[in-house]
Amino acid sequence: MGIFLYKTESGLVASRDGSFGFWSGDWDSLFRLADVREELKSFASDHNEAAQVACQDSLLPPIGLQEVWASGVTYYSSRLARMEESKSAGGSDFYAAVYNADRPELFFKSTPERVRGHGQSVRIREDSSWDVPEPELSLALGSDGVIFGYTIGNDMSSRSIEGENPLYLPQAKSYNGSAGLGPCLCLLDTPIPAESKIRLSIERGGASAFDGETQLSEMKRKPEELAAYLFREMDFPNGCYLMTGTGIVPGTDFTLKSGDRITISIDQLGSLIQTVE
Image (cartoon, rainbow, N blue to C red; front, side):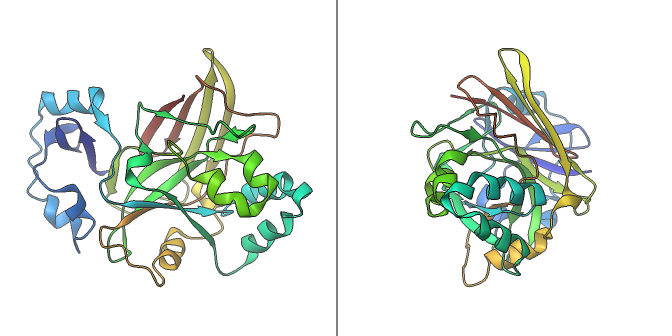
């Protein structure tokens, strides 16, 4: 499977083959290494009960100094949703064009301090009337631009603001509590398979309010392609995260409400569970 790295209030925890142990390494140095696995060879896999408890009770977002960026319109279903919501503003052609273009849509999503982790709450904007989570495979990119790990991303979005005018995208996407990452950073033994499934479920008042599923093979662009475009003309000395777009879009009759419980699951990576403030 691989190695799973957790940030906790008690320190960094590494897990391999079901065993948990505290790791004395530096989080940000991982994103600057040419060979992360070589660095982690020294990790002792003897099980430490306290380390496992820390992952359950005091988990933090798996991020240090990394910026979070995101990709848009990488799935056909997302193309259709963006076109529909922006039709009245005359912006639907933009989304159709970027889906077919060579250059992908990339945008800045979040600074580290605005990111929320597993078990923490995310937010919807007070000035928005239509809001959704966007479940996304998120790439851990080293300072050299190479994908060395993965995590689960929640790209919280205001569809009402983005639909009003595509130029409002930064406000629709970037605000306090708009980015979720977790539960950990996953260093898989091989690249994540294209047939891996992504699932989204939303509970409201103990009942299901939405369920959806897609798989990575539905992405129009390869993760490596998105990473290559992001690193054109930009350096990331501490590496970064890149969300790769969503293929699950709730219908026009759905909007998030305070108290909703969001669960995003990706094969091999686990589940990211968050509640809406």
